[in-house]
Structures are given as C-alpha cells and as structure tokens.
Length: 125
Image (cartoon, rainbow, N blue to C red; front, top):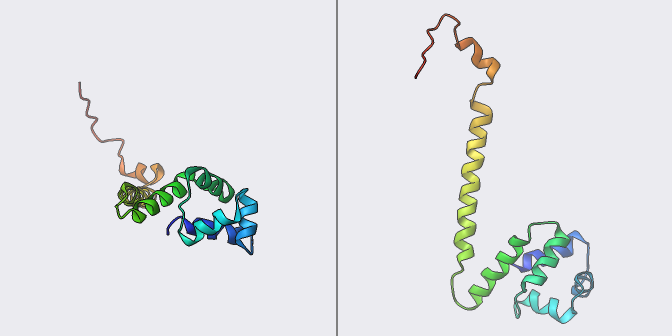
C-alpha cells in the first residue's frame, strides 16, 4: 500500500505511538485510521489533503498514492503510475541538463579570452 507510507511517515514525524494518537491528530476516527493502515479502506482526497498538510508536502503525492492503491485493489493499472514514471524521467533529464549547464559551460569571464578584438564581425541582414 503506497498511501500507508504517508500515514507511517506522519506518525514517525510527530512521534505518535499509536493509531489512536494519529486519529486524534487528523481529526478522524480510530477505526478509520486502522482501516487505512490494514488496507481495508483507501483514503479519500480529503484525508490525503489533511495528511499532506501535516507533512508539509504536495497533496498530489498522497492523492496519487491513494489512487494507485485504489486501482490495484480493483485489479487495474492506474494512469498515475505512468504519470509518476514520466515525471521521474523528466526530473532526471532536467537534473542532468542543470548539472551540465552549471559545471561544463564556461562563465562569461572564462569565455572572454576566446573572443578576439581583431576577429572579423559578421553581420547578417
């Protein structure tokens, strides 16, 4: 269960010892939290939002995890899985591009000696 990890993370972050303490923190019933933890019930978007706010993270991450859990429970594949893989790939490409740009591109002061004042100027009209 992907969404349960956020409940566990919140318990750890807030140093909560029991599901009851977690339920009180989230203003939910203890049975509700217990059902989320055991997978008998999947969190709705309101619960996901409450958890994300407590953790200080993007609510879409928790909602996505709950929707993936819901699809798996129904024996289906979730489009969120495809979306999350694509965004991870795009993030990797962006990170690699940033590293190349930061470390391999010369600064203007490093590039200046390469320009010669005597070099012919090309004007395109």
